[in-house]
Amino acid sequence: MPEKPHERIAEIKRKAEAGPILLQNSFRPFFMAAGLWATLAVPFWLLNYADLLELPDGFDAMLWHQHEMLFGFAAAAIAGFILTAIPNWTGRLPVSGWRLGLLVAFWLVGRLGFITSVSLGPLVTAVLDLAFLTTLALMIGRELISGKNWRNLPVLLLISFFTLGNWLVHLELTGLTETAEIGIRLSTFVLSILIAVIGGRIVPSFTRNWLVRNGAVVLPEPMGRFDTIALVALIVFVIAQVLMPDQPLTSWLAFLAGALHGARLLRWKGWAVLGEPLMWVLHLGYAWLAVALVLIGLSGLTDLVSPTSAIHALTAGAFGTMIVAVMTRASLGHTGRDLAATPGTTLVFILITIAALLRVTAPLLPDISLTMIWISGGAWMLAYGLFSVLYFPVFTQPRQQAPMPSPTPK
Image 1: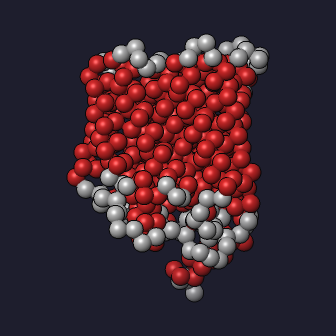
Image 2: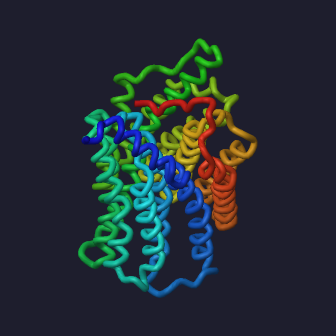
Image 3: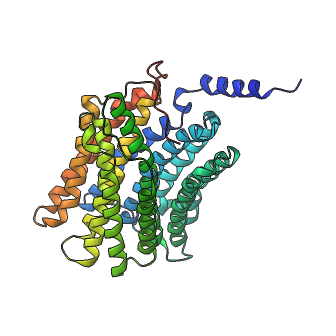
């Protein structure tokens, strides 16, 4: 007799649960990978930055740093979050087992390939590195289309543009074009849109849930026309930033987007959740996005802010903070643990904030800037290293039975 649909689903679930715990949920291997790579990649870069590490001739350390923070660290976090969220969006079974293991293997060989690119050559490096994000985009597309989840197709579009940025980097490395710079810029600022889109869902939703649970009267404003205007303004800025980054109009668009997203954040009543680190860190991560946009505007129009400070407000500040904020909360929620920050988790949030603040302000104090960069890198390494240690049991142990996880907003 042909197998019935519910029997097939039950068999798939049984096989997933029978396999390694690490491959039962996408967030487990990918959040672990993001934490470990963030811990290892920054000291590697700092040693090279200080000329303490001798690298092979032809190894572009700056490009490696930019590439690995985007397509190694951030991409792993994106994969873990999106693939974990998709079952809530579509009602389909999660990606797990051998399919998840294969995707993790693609991520890993991409990291090894890029760091040994001088020996492997540009073509082999490209094949190894592009397999991960390309497969991820196809996998996300398959899940969304099969689940008829048209509402989240913009997320697929953003992931596709993020992936395109990596293709543009490798097109230059293989000698076909000169597109590495625009590829890095495209992926960096597409990631800012992704943070605004996903953050615009989870920050007010989780804030509302926490406030209601604690009997608060003042709640975040619901999603509405203002949020749409803020997102459109950010998208227009990103298009201008990618295509004409040095134009004054682009800087004014950055100001406008920063002001709108700062106002958007205020509508979510972040001051009411200061008692819970798992909550305020989400608001802090989004605040870094608004601050970064304003600093990008200032750096383009004045000499008051270094472009390096502005871009690190976005990368170390917004990306670094929001990623660790989402990874901690999602890991606890989806493994049935209490949604409250331990002292160790709170320390992670404090360390990443110190790292971002020092990296952004370092260019303003040239006499001690190198020292500040080293301390910033140390704080970053400690933050993600501590995250990796604290959450290793979360990733490798079975789900606890209570309490139930908060669903990812649809």
